[in-house]
Image (cartoon, rainbow, N blue to C red; front, side, top):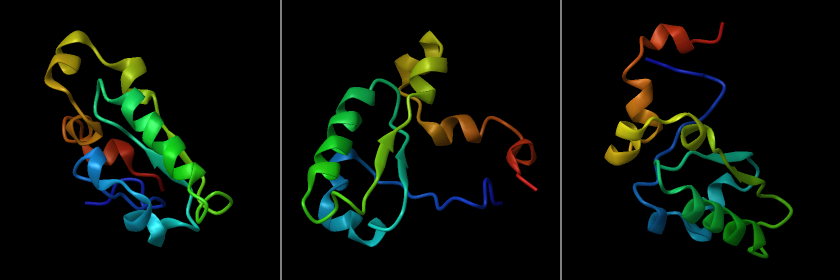
Length: 98
């Protein structure tokens, strides 16, 4: 299964695993972080930290999506859903970009 083939999907495992050293391989890429629900502010802070890193500043555009925060319902928030939780709820063919 391949959803949005034009993107490379990576999971950090946790915000503590997201650091300049581990992100070095991504320095030429546009990075969009999709934090778990209720984690937006922490991930936004982490993105600013990574963007300020001297070795990445001009080569590491990183942003944080608020998509989940803007669209989640109360139950999803209580369960701390992440992007993968939503993607597995739907037929993957709805997401294929031809």
